[in-house]
Amino acid sequence: MLAEENEKMTRTGPGTPAGNWMRRYWQPVALTEELDGPRPVAAVKILGEDLVLFRNDDGSLGLIERRCAHRGADLSLGRLEDGGLRCYFHGWLFDGSGACLETPAEPAGSKLASRVRLTAYPVRECNGIVWGYLGPGEQPNLPALDCFLAPEEYTFAFKGFLDCNWLQALEVGIDPAHASYLHRFEEDDDPSDAYGRQFRNVSLGTDLPMTKILRDYGRPEILNTRTDYGQRIVALRRIDGDGYDGSATHVRITHQVFPHGITIPLSSSMAITQWHVPVDDTSCYWYAMFTSLTEPVDREKMRAQRLEGITLPDYKPVRNRANQYMFDPAEQKTSTYTGVGHDINVHDQMAVEGQGHIHDRTREHLSRSDRAIVTYRRMLLAAIDAVAAGKNPDLLLKDTADVESRGPIPLDGIGPTGQWESYWTDAVELLRKSSPWAQNSAAARATGPAGVRSAPAEPDDELLPPYPGTPN
Ligand code: FES
Ligand SMILES: [Fe+2]
Image 1 (cartoon, protein in one colour):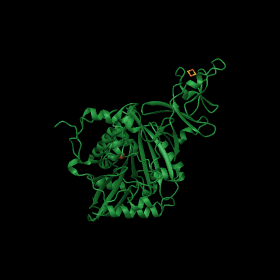
Image 2 (cartoon, rainbow, N blue to C red):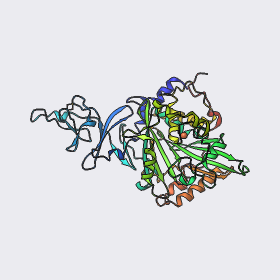
Image 3 (cartoon, rainbow, N blue to C red):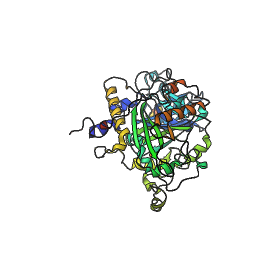
Image 4 (cartoon, helix red, strand yellow):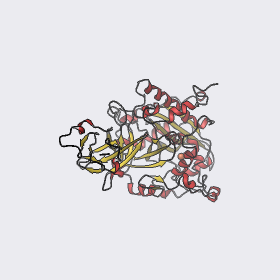
């Protein structure tokens, strides 16, 4: 990968090519719970822009520049009153559209306020997350994905800070091989305590714990396919130990969703759609939307589990770069691959932060297991170039109105070897039938649960370096 390509993909501030591309999509700017306190105001930094989010008495939301238009005081500490945020310095009042409503220190009759305006962005709230549209032109719809279409009680949202560039945070999520190493546990848990936790349950249709499958089968066959939302990624582990004769295969299907999301299974009936949103070029937040097909989510339990590992109000991990993730060499020798505990979010965090604040992709040696990453980078560079050429990126996903749902539906289970596609389709059909809210979602069924059935896998010879543009 050329240094210029790495720059192009990773820099997302105002006016940058990737920043212009990313601004064509709705971005998660805060959890709804961040506005739950007595003073619903949150400082927000996203895509290198300093903003402030607030909720007025009438429930309406505003997302405006953080610096006052007068002489730049910090509006996130302003007075929330009179339908907007009032600067604590000289009392100027701004509403959610960025309009200046009052300049009380000016002479009576002054028209100054009418000439002053702050940048403001449209906001929407959906399933526990406040979304902002920081781009030009008309705002798209939220995409037709299960995580947006599910009734709120079937969802739960949470977030966490990562001290590195957004792209490496995303890339760990489309790398199916790492789970056999980074997330390896030497002992299997009691699956009855698995609710709300990744990789701790048995795989759908067997009594084999996920931890054991990942540990024992470390060379998955990986197939990735382009779809209308990004990619479908299939990891196959043929089971030929523990009394199995190879006629069964562990199938794990995950998805990459544009611009910077993934959808992965948490359990047999719950999916995680996780977005990786730049704060600036060297840090980001992951925002996870947990979506249950079959029953309302126990949010209190899931929130309590996740609060154990982070500190509020900024959702920064307790284990972090500064304390070396509380690394324990004895644990690394005996029970986990990493030595940093059992929370897989911490494992991923250590892996991606370990690559540096902005991973230098000119020095890596990509392998066959990186195929979905290679495809994503190709799609990403093409989308950035499309926007730079004045076009819309193909993968805008702005059609909530005309597509019932694309899912995309992930899966983790064991099916007949060589038949993952029909196994997946049947399993998903069954799952959707048992869902009170998604059972009539005909679009997702008719086209196959991830939109595209029998789409060709990315060919092998396309996948390994050199990239287009690499000299040699
Ligand atoms: S700096 Fe905000 S009112 Fe003066
Ligand atoms: Fe991971």
